[in-house]
Structures are given as structure tokens and as C-alpha cells.
Length: 313
Ligand code: CP
Image 1: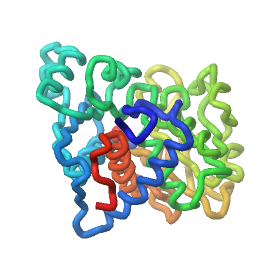
Image 2: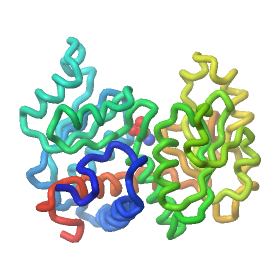
Image 3: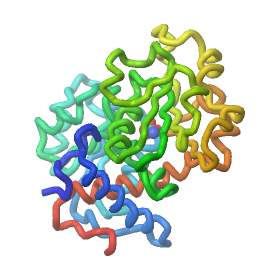
Image 4: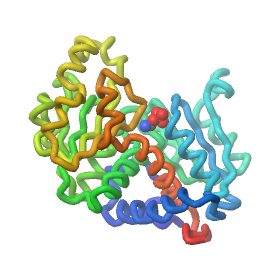
């Protein structure tokens, strides 16, 4: 049994407002724990979590591992470079062999969209998506939403601009679903070559001119320019991208007074964001990372069985 409608977190597309609110409210309690001298709870004692990372990660992997440890779970870390994947073992065989050693939950990052869903079909564990291809990165969007709600006390009615590769960004996709369900007004901005042909399905305002997109925005969430897209011919040069879509100090004047600057990391400083903006007073880039740990503690707790003790312990 899970405290959410599903026992897995594969994406935010079909997560209800009630479940999103429960995750964000539960995060409040775990965020408070992170400010205590002893940041440890017995919540997941006896639960074993596999962190199955087929792609590189700094923030998400360490954040999940710390969240699990702070909740007293046993953790196992898997990376492809030191595993028998190098000898050709499949995802299914890999995970079924590890599950035979008695694990309860799997946190998975994979380059293929749908890999977390596939794991729900061939294992018994609760599965949490830590980023799958260009599909979704739900805990990143949840931590973004939590960080916004913590500052403004609400998500309803805020204007949030998501800048970058709308076609390939899993962070943008999860943010769109989550923010719209919670009542925010979402605008998308990026080069026309990086906007999907079916973009209208998101129900967002879409811009290819950054100055127009920023007008009256409360929150700007800037995505990493995926440099490999340049080789694919989807934008001419980094310099042109920076000129047209780089977030600079000059552009801040278009935003509302109490504006917020966000970036999920890793950043290309001087490309999609200037250092002045990234390190400025309105930037919440490092608080996003701190809040991410609390969000992941909340998700792990809510997906675990009803016998887990809550954050008040
Ligand atoms: N934001 C994010 O997913 O960062 P990592 O790739 O370092 O986990």
C-alpha cells in the first residue's frame, strides 16, 4: 500500500492535485528535519532501496542516497561502469538479479524513456523515476514546485517561464504537468527547432522571443543547453543561443519585482545563464538542491508501506 494513488512515481502527467499537495505538504515536515543537528529518522528502517543509475548524475543520485540514509533505509548504489552491464547483461536481468537479494524500492535513471515503467512490469519493487530520456524527471519538478511554493506560499496564479530545449527536456515536461495541475500559468521559450510540433498539447503560451516571454514573469526556470544538440544541427552556435536565450542581468528588468531565478543544474555558466544571474540575490539554485533532498524523503516515505513512521518521529 502507498499513501499516494500509485505505488510508483513514474511522472507527474497523471498525478492529481491532491497527491501533489500531499507530497509538497509532507516535504515541509522533512525540510524541517534537515535543519536539526541530527538529521535522522527511523522512517524507512528495514527498507532496502536500490539506486539504479544508468546515466551520470550528481544532484539526483546524491540527494536520493542522502534522503534514504536520513530515513534509515539500507541503500545499494548501482552504476553501469562497474557492473556486468559492461559484459552485456540486460536491464531486466540486472534488476531481477539485484531484486533476488531482497530490495524493496528502486530509484532509476536511464537514457531510455519508459525504462522506469518497464521496471514496474518485471519487478515487485516500488519504482521512482529519477529521469528517463526525454520523458520526465518528476522529483526535479516537485523540488522546483516546492521551492516556488515555499517562497510565494502558493503556485496558483504565478507566471512561470521555462526556458530551453522544450523538445528534449524531461525537467520541462515534468514541470509543465505539475505546475499546470497546481494552477500556475506556464510559458515556454526556446528556439523554434527545439519546440515539438505538438507543443499545443501542453496548453502553455509558447515564445521564441525571450524578452517577450519574460514580461511580467514571477519565476524563470532556465534549463541547461544540451550541447550535443548543436552537433545535431538544432541550433547554429552556443554564442547565438546565448545572445537569443541567455539569461543576463539586462533581461531581469522585464520580470516582476519579487522575481525568482531557478536552474536544475548542471549549469553552463555564460551560456544559458550568466554568473551574475546565477549567483544573484533572487537566485534559489542552491536552495532548490537542499529542498530536493526533503522532497525525495517525502516521496520515499509516501510510497513506502503504511507501517513506516512519519516525519514527526
Ligand atoms: N538536476 C539534475 O537532475 O542534476 P543531475 O543530473 O546532476 O542529477
